[in-house]
Image (cartoon, rainbow, N blue to C red; front, side, top):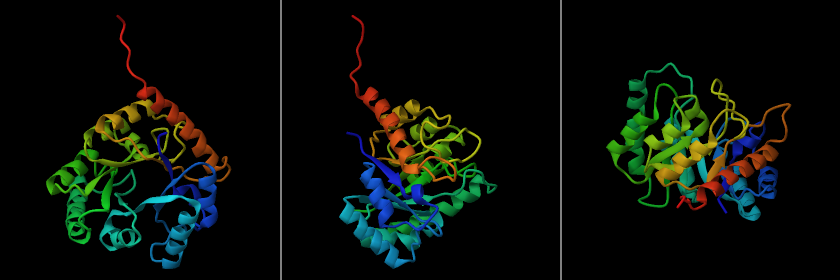
Length: 259
């Protein structure tokens, strides 16, 4: 069975706690990606972090990653290291930005160089969210990572953001060999809506095929934002998981050729 996880943004409207972890476990999600945002998950709140570690352990949920703004990576990497979380994701900004591509690339490179000295030799990796909007394309991020040439660094494919910036399959293919994580959410191609996969215009079969070609096979993390007036976020994520699982099962079938 393919592994699917849930980003904590499913509960973004309030402070993340044990009840939320129990809800995702009850829905069949065994992997949690923590997304640090104000009012939801405060990295400086040690009591909250320790509560999440304890609640996840009791529920049988594995915390797979901690997602923070890329500029916070050097300061926050130790949070994941100290708690044994295997992946830190660096968010590279909103999809619509005015910063030039050269400026964005210049800012990212020294952050990663500093992280090289802070990370343990093994056990914790850093994945840079790609693409980083108009200012930081997948190709630009890949070029930075290839120049560093450190196996602890890779990319986190953000399928929803990629759909707004040239295409999700294209972003996956450009990062071949570097994909460490994949965040799945949908939109119409105009706004960063963080809808459940299947609720927008993304061709999910093409995205999953492109990831498969890179050698990435999961876990697939659903990053579905809770929205006032819409159906329960976890229920929508469960439906999206079923749709994606069906696509993956089709991909796993052996190819047949007419005689």
